[in-house]
Image (cartoon, rainbow, N blue to C red):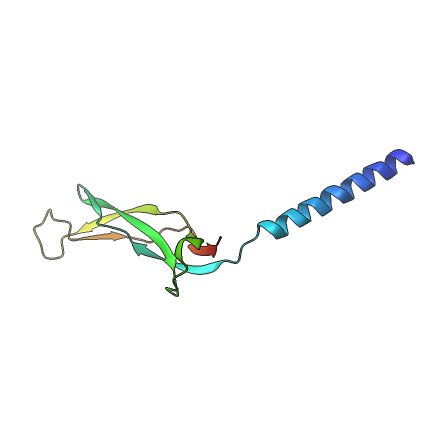
Length: 104
């Protein structure tokens, strides 16, 4: 009986610790938006486009604002009326990763 009581108390204390730890680590997510970051890179008829996640509301928070890490996606080159082998525009989709920011 004493062993069972110890096990139950032990599990309850672990549950309370995890619950308290989760509430401290959560930060409010602020909706973000993916934007082109720099010029795309040509790879024959394909291209890669760097993206950066920014706060959707464009509110300045200084260095306390952190966002999802930058990513690169791949697409097809569009000559945009330029030479046939040109790459005026990279038709690459936004990253599939959720873009959000938070205050530290």
